[in-house]
Length: 165
Image 1 (cartoon, helix red, strand yellow):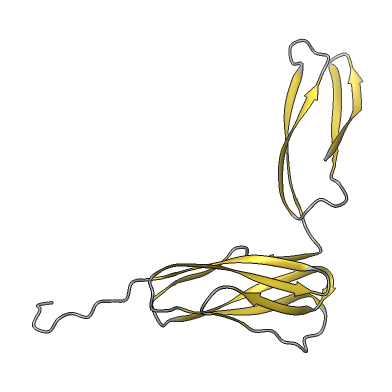
Image 2 (cartoon, one colour):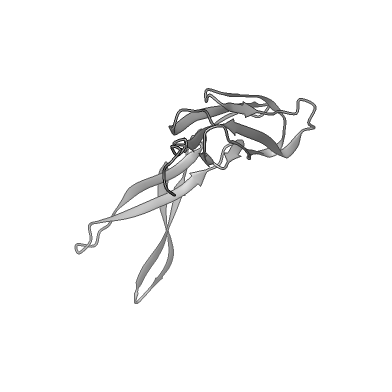
């Protein structure tokens, strides 16, 4: 990241500047949160910290990210959609996951378009707890990855016969 200060106005009340910040051409996709330090000739404020925030959007993005599949009881199933967006029309070539109980559905014959949907079906296993994993999506414009998260609740305990309700 580089910065440049450009004077915009000057009068009897002071001087106004515009800070122009430029990212490197190959900046990776994702959130940016950096501090720049402006060095001045003002003895009362020799250095001024400036927070620069933004988001670099890649050729291909996926949302929601992370994908929360919900809190399910053992044996329950849920299907949610991943939305894959390109700066131009794209095709999804493959989608894989390392998450047990997750099935991804791709339409191999889907025409290229700026937005593609990938249904993600999660079948909760018998083991209670947090389930996490990743989906890796390969498109003709590039690769993206998204985290998956689900919770499997404790199975309901059957009441013993003869107990009062």
